[in-house]
Figure 1: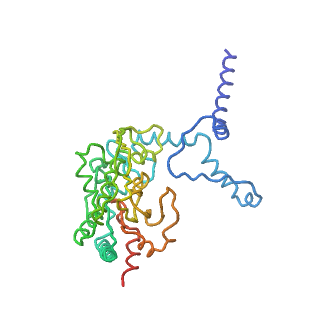
Figure 2: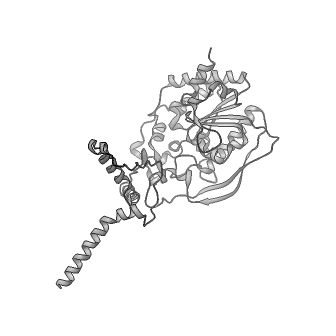
Figure 3: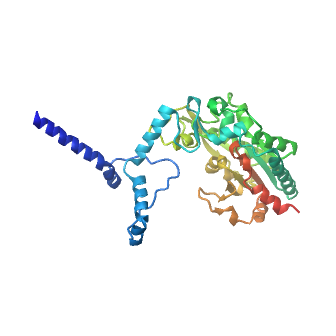
Amino acid sequence: MKNWKLKFRKLLLIGVLALLFLPMIQNKFKVIKIKPLYGTIRVPQKSYLKLKDWFSGTYQKNTEKYLNETFGFRNFFIRLNNQIAFDLFKKAKANGVIVGKENYLYEEKYIKAYNGTDFVGEDSIADRMQKLKFIQDTLRRMNKSIFIVFAAGKASFYPEYIPDKYLLKKGPTNYETYLKYAQRMKINYIDFNKYFIDQKHSSKYLLYPKYGIHWSYYGSTIVADSIIHYIEKLRNIEMNHLMCGEFKIEQSKDIDNDIGDGMNLLVNLKGPTMAYPKVYFGTDSLKGKPSVLVISDSFYKEMYRYGIPSVFSNTHFWYYNKEVFSGSDVSDKETSQVDLREELKNHDVIMIMSTEATLQKLGWGFVENVYKLYHP
């Protein structure tokens, strides 16, 4: 009996020691393959001992931070913690993410935009739209075109799943006010927010995903096709069009699961299946290829990635009017490094795209900069 107890104690001690040393072993030898965390993860650099850093305490502080963020199984424990918070408390361990009814996921800023709590004021919007009207008239005389694209917003598309505590008395919204002035001043625009809501129950495939913040991959193909047709109408030209081949019906992934991925859960979320058409564009060299400058938030990114620039010439994508993309997934430079007058001279069409959550700063300074450039 005593021998059995002794053996048990030894085994227990060995087990405890193994558990203590297992993270160290994992960190050193990567014994078990652990799924990396989704998103922008900044891993601290390992510090090397220097005498001055030791006495100042910098080495100890940096080493502690490095060990806390790189120990073995860290990613697993983070995902486990996030899963427990989600399953038991309906909490999302992701910045600004709200878990709605039936586990629909939102970013809080979209709910604020839907309620109107981020409203910047009618005077501010009227002033920007007056500037935009002046720019539109000026560019028209130069045989150039400019238009706004109101991208769809998830809170407007799925208001029924917003948690009750976030549903406030609606006030005036940036979207409604911008739309009013666009119509009143005859500023060129496409309203996909209204179009998506109108097509919500009649669309063959989902236009907005349950676990994503952007319009669905399928929805973006409708947008891309509509933008091409709209430019044709503005410029009175015929362009190459977007075409969809084989449709795959799968669980949401990539852009359709961007919030779900960002929550870094242990178990992948299961939701409605989504449509993934194979996208390609016409290549008729006799068709018109206008030069297009796009100033947009992230809602243009998916179209950019699957090839809409191929129907344009000399196309540039200014992400939040800050980073410049010229055909690759890596930005070339920042907009502060380019000559604005020269860029406008080299493009036939300017498109400003914004979803409801980013409309407070429509154009992100672009409208004001162009206005200063051309206003006498």
